[in-house]
Image 1 (cartoon, rainbow, N blue to C red):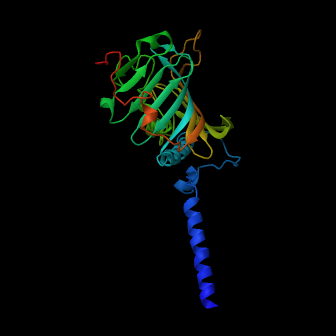
Image 2 (tube, one colour):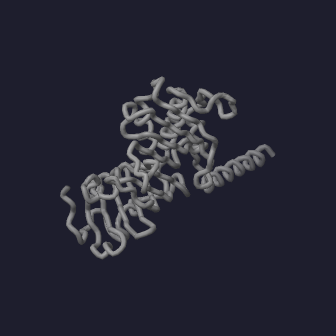
Image 3 (cartoon, rainbow, N blue to C red):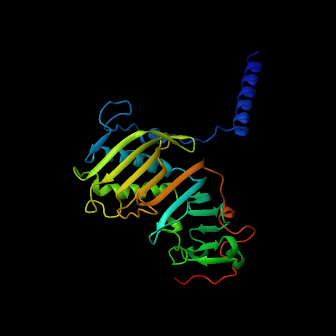
Length: 291
């Protein structure tokens, strides 16, 4: 009887092992707050204290959430999203672009497909001599594909930043760099914690940061930041500067970014970041930019 019981126990154990091998537990990332540990903000969400404060208190709150989001996003292998982008380039506020985005962090890789005119950009770090592979949109698509340096004049003709600066992680880093010089300033900066809003169906904290004068912040007058409640990353950012055109841009909007329909840790491979059916750096029909 003891032998029979021992054999039965072994069979049950082996069955459990095989079931685990066939259906391993799904890998999930904790939310940003859990990953970073519990960090107390200066005023909790339920507090009746002032939500608009002069000086660095609220700005440090915003930076604290951004640091949690940055650290969490560094654990993400990549994602897909719908990316909305609007910028003022050479004093001209561009129309808003809607872009199907694929992004991988290691090696840094980007695929961008403009929904409106069919423009396509591919980039994979370490391949194609670190150049973009680009096909223009609309009627210009007839000219085929081109290799361009990311910071060349042609590649930057309708953008404030190179493609290598795109993405939620880089946006976290840019905001932290923007706030760092004023995190300890007691005057000249006003930061307000606004009521929560949704971006693409996801609940967000909303911060407004205003600067008293160009001497405090010469490039930005105001920033509005929507930070995802779960992930602590910016899903939408609007930046305003000191130059306003009452006719075409009365508020001085200079940058407007929004990420929606985000799929975290999407299954992405090298093939997602190159011309379909080709290898990265394949011969293209236009000459490469030398800028």
